[in-house]
Amino acid sequence: MAPTPTPTAPPPVPVPESSTDAPPRLLRWTRGQYEQAIDAGVFGEDDRVELITGHVVEMSPQNAAHATAVTLIDYALRTALPSSSFARIQLPLALSAESAPEPAVAIVEGTPADFAEAHPDTALLVVEVSSRSLAFDRSEKQGVYARAGIPTYWIANLVEGVLEVYTDPGGGRYRTVRTLEADATVAVPGTDATLPVGNLLP
Image (cartoon, rainbow, N blue to C red):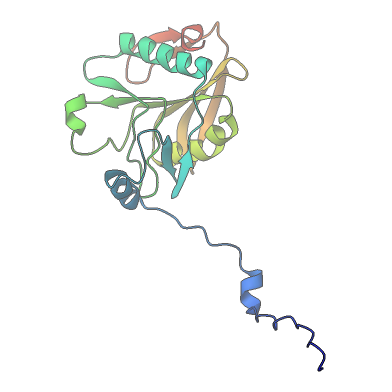
């Protein structure tokens, strides 16, 4: 009886040398593609995402402190705004071909009805409420808002209990940064009003 042949491993599949050196390719989205995906239902109502420099970024879930800060900022700003501007809460801004962030609060000139066909492409002020997202908001988000020429950017820093105020955009960054404690006041852009910083923080 002939011996049973010993199985042999299949020959290795040749791998092109270039594929071992190339990093994985990250697909970038344009704002047009992103908005088409939203219209097509690719992202559901429970998907908290935004487009930042061509990448779809998942936003951090809101804990009680975050939600309270958004409400406090919204309430305080509404009492200070003239009728020529209004607050948009966690809604998109069409800032560039690759970015459509959804800041916690944005102060926009005009009326809500002015944007029935398209999102605003600028704002007088944008505000982010930050704890886990603090590093991202200080770097990537700052760059997005500065490049779009947003004159004033606030970060309600829940980690340290302060308000970070960014002004004078240029070169893709804000050239002036101030950190305000709870007992300070802050000027509301586009108005003569000031607000106690403590009224904006939980």
